[in-house]
Length: 291
Image (cartoon, rainbow, N blue to C red; front, top):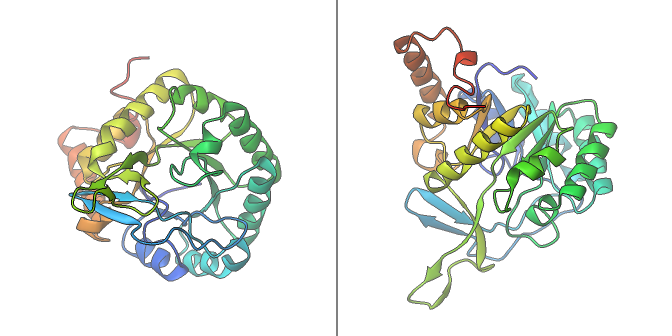
C-alpha cells in the first residue's frame, strides 16, 4: 500500500461515515482508518462516554457501529478521493475476524486493521489481544482469507507487548498502540465520570508509552510498524519514526488542531529534514534505536 506521506487518520476519529473520511483525505491525510466495525450493530454504552482531561480524552464509546452489512456505502464514498481506506474490524474469534475482513475487502478496503486492543468492552479488543495464541490464530486466518495487507493493532495493556507482537508476526504491519485503560473519578458526584467506569486514555499523556512500545518491538522484531498514540506535531512524528515506525496514525489531536493538522505536520517534517540535511524518511526510521 503506497502512501503519499506517513500521516494516517486513526480509527475512531471522524471516520464513522464516508463523507467525513473523504473530507479528511481531501485535507491532507495520506490514508484513513475506519471506525471499528463488527458483525452486527452495536449501540455502545450510555452517556457519559467521553471525558476531556486537558489535551487528553478518556472514552468508553463501547464499539458502537452500524454492523458490517451496513458499511459498504461508507467505504465507497471515502474511496472516491483515490487514497487508501483501511477497514478496522473487531470480533471475538478468528472465524469472526476472517469473515469481517473478507467483507471489508469486498467493499474495497485497501487494507484491514485488526482491533485487538480496545480496552473497555468485554469479550473484544484487549481481552482478545492479550492472548498470544488467539492473536496468532486470528492473524493467520485473516491473512489466509484476504489478499490486501493486514495490520494488527496491539494493546499496551499487557505485561510484554513484544510477546504479542511476535504472535502477530504474519501481519503485514503492527499498529502500536491503542488507548491505555484508565478511570477518572468525578469528586463531586463521588463516582466514575464515564458510565462504564473504565475507558481508554488517548492524547499526549500516552505518547511516551506508545514510543516505548514501538522502540521495544522494533528492537526485537523485523516487523513494519505504524506508530499511534499522543501525536500532536511533527516532533512527535519524528520521535515515533526514530523509534522504528514507518508511518503514524493521528487521532485525538484533531480535537484542538483541526483537520489542517495533516498538512501542517507534513510541511514541518519537510522543513525539519531540510534543516537536518536528510535526503529521505528512510534516514529517520529507527535512528534512535540500538539493535
